[in-house]
View (tube, rainbow, N blue to C red):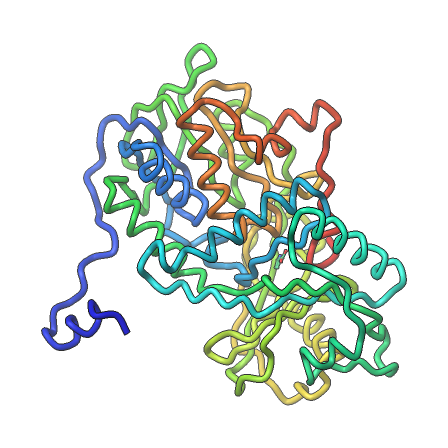
Length: 411
Ligand code: PYC
């Protein structure tokens, strides 16, 4: 336990606020739309690495209330394309040093990530991913049912299930993390360096004059700025439209749920693209489970019985012993899907309007590196090599980065 906590316990002093509620300024150098892990990380790196602290984050609800608080906390870099693997691998490295950097335990547990293959074509895709991963220096390889059983004794690797397990892509550095802690850590440190976090502040318009952003309208008044970052999920295309920018994004809900707490029995992450499930066990003992996005575009975050029924059936195919376990709660988040399942990061045709959007189901795990590279882009007015493949113009240049094959589940 840290000395700080022990001192607080004995002196009975409440801990200081993690972040403050500052007054609205008339003008900011950078306005970030979206107080999730991406927007907060960008503000943190703008201040820390570039000395840009006159920054406002506008969050329409509370920080972390969107995708950052609604995901299943999986961190990994075992993607399919070299561009994707390189990018997410930098994110994993930043997550590995985050607790030390923040002096705050974000509970990153690198317990290993297994993507199961139930068909010959899935085995082929896993083999290809393993080779692309290894060429990029990422630890990832194929394993067979006997080794899967050793890593995860309760899983059914017999011939009995409808889709028997043939192999898995094993990615030892993959893990889970406490997602709220990531949000709080970035918010705290950005706040301490002078960034203004404005919660309950909703963007209502973006003012553009002669092709350049000049300010933003909010439910609390007008702010002058020459630089706006759209770091939202769920509504990114509607926000871009306020600046006159059209994004190739369609929004789908993604549902997840947790079971009642169980004794620890699952210390790897299990993913099955064919069965459309992923599951891990949290530090509280709950099984955290998710599926594919809902089969229709929508902004609804309602849960459905069809989801709970479907996921229960698939989880029981893998872990028949869980038939008595109850589901405790469920929720949904919004996923902004792009045509190639890769994000859109960088400049737009409107000067001073940049985007960090279109993350589909991959957003949370990219937070540190997207924040760092977007901060560099804003500070230097040039695109870092690492995110050049994800520029908006790729859709008009026939230069897509097809990442669908690395999705945890089919979409
Ligand atoms: O890509 O690891 C993943 C993931 C897990 C949940 C949604 N996406």
